[in-house]
Length: 115
Length: 109
Image (cartoon, rainbow over all chains, first blue to last red; front, top):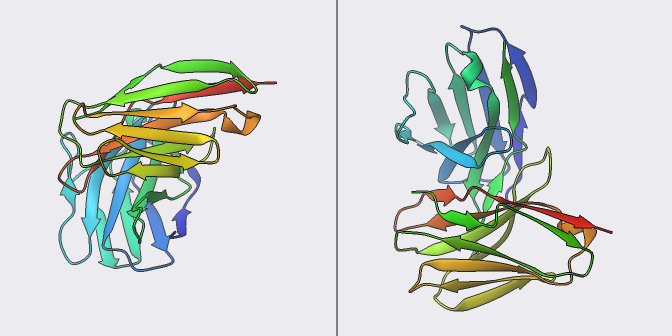
């Protein structure tokens, strides 16, 4: 399965600022997914990032707030813009595995605290 | 649409068994199961693609009833290492994976 390097692992940010989260995959993948996980909660899909096209956002998430870049098949970034305390959460990137099982592999996550 | 998972939590002693259920109101193409330990990323356990299919991972197995749009995860002879939160992921005819609310499993010695 793919190995994902996600940075930063955690950050404490001031409200009104922005944070960019990076995900690097050790192999080429078509789709990358960005999820948000509130403490003790399930994973909610933010958007799907395809190389060469605009990201597809889920209901409740907009590009102005969560701009995504996907410059190539191994890298993606998610920016959390104009942050408020409600954005405090864990953000995870994920890719679909290659092979017959197609399980998802997750990055280690970015724990964001907005103060 | 988020699949419905039950129970919300279960406490076991080592060696006991448990069943976690997952159901969806949408027609399912596949069901995934993941385990997440505290402070870590979710880890893929298995995927079920066909109706009535069963798979296993260690002493953890699962079934998928495609007609009922339900899946169950079976923890057999539980070990301390089985502790964590289990999520089912439901995939319909698109590429998106929707996760259930999770079931927290605590295995005690």
